[in-house]
Image (cartoon, rainbow, N blue to C red; front, side, top):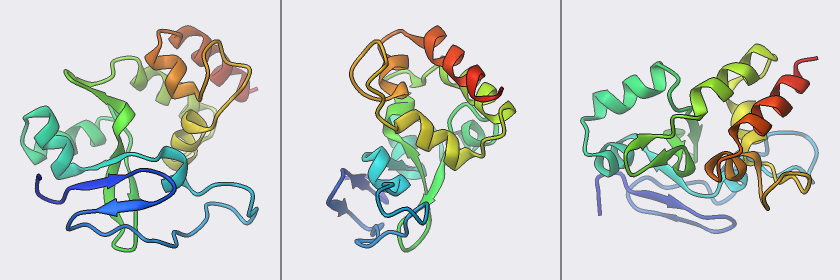
Length: 151
């Protein structure tokens, strides 16, 4: 296990040395809306992402600062974590920064962008959420939909 290992799969949290809240705060007042932690499911702390990628912690922090990946503070201790689906074996998924920019230009903050990317949508060309469609090669369709949100 790596330092600060955090594996969080909805609905139950399994944490190693970085506990995650068992009762996370909802992102909205609507009780039917899942919180961000549960919506994403599997998160990587900065140390875990560094270990997975084989890079120093400073490199992962730079990826976040450069918006190659987005991160959110999760759990009771508010640790910084990255959705695991934002990374592949080689590093950050190259399709994501442009999508982040389109959504941010439409007025979304980072947490709203993460929530939108992980919210299931039955109208997508693949089953799942926009992040799943991006990972399946449907970047253009997802960006088109993101642009429509801005209007």
